[in-house]
Image 1: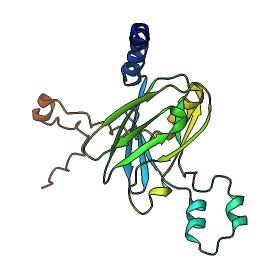
Image 2: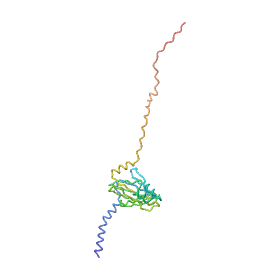
Image 3: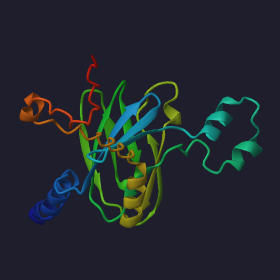
Image 4: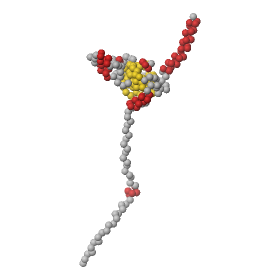
Length: 219
């Protein structure tokens, strides 16, 4: 009985160290190379690349939205759309081999941002900012959805993450940044100022001209 009691305790002690270390690492967002802010709305997501002046909303793609609202849509039409209810109009593009920090919140009700392939789910709560991080190793498309009942269209809040190599991501990010404002036209040069002494100097008489003498009077 002593062995049955002591041995499991020793096993738990040995397992506690790596398990605790892994749990701490899961929530350690330090040393991230970039930060993405995720805000949940009814019924869409807003993504902001902090410090890059790039942001956009992402919602159910128009074809899925059209089909779900069309009561006469046939099964053939739905099957013809390969990612029915799982596609979006704007994908979240992220670089691979990069530690990415997420700050997650909501603007109206509680949502939950969940992409199973990233290995975690995080609640999006109004007035509270939660954190998480990921480091995607393989380029590709990763799909998820809102995992918190948030209203009548809760089932129509898909998430699509597109992971691309770093160089491709840099090009994409540059293309999304607003164009720099045009430089103002140079001002016309000011007229040359007249020296004060020249302005107060007396006018110079014109050069004398030859005049015909008047004829003398005759007696």
